[in-house]
Image (cartoon, rainbow, N blue to C red; front, top):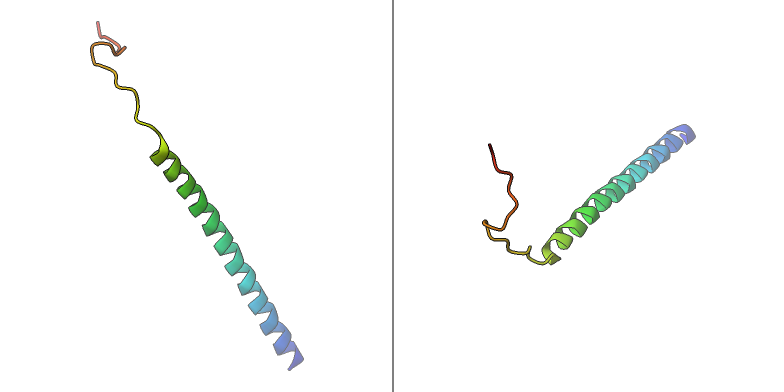
Amino acid sequence: MKTLFFTLSSLSGMNTSALIMMLVANGVVIGISVYYFVRILRMGPTDHVDEDEANYPRGG
């Protein structure tokens, strides 16, 4: 009986650590994604450049 209890407690401990690891990993990924998304949204508009003034490479 003691061996069964020890095995079940070890299994539940492993599941808890796996759950915590999953939540931390998901939190990091979501945090980085939100950071860059907000960073892009807060960027100002780019300067307008007329096509005549643009430095496009010319063929030939």
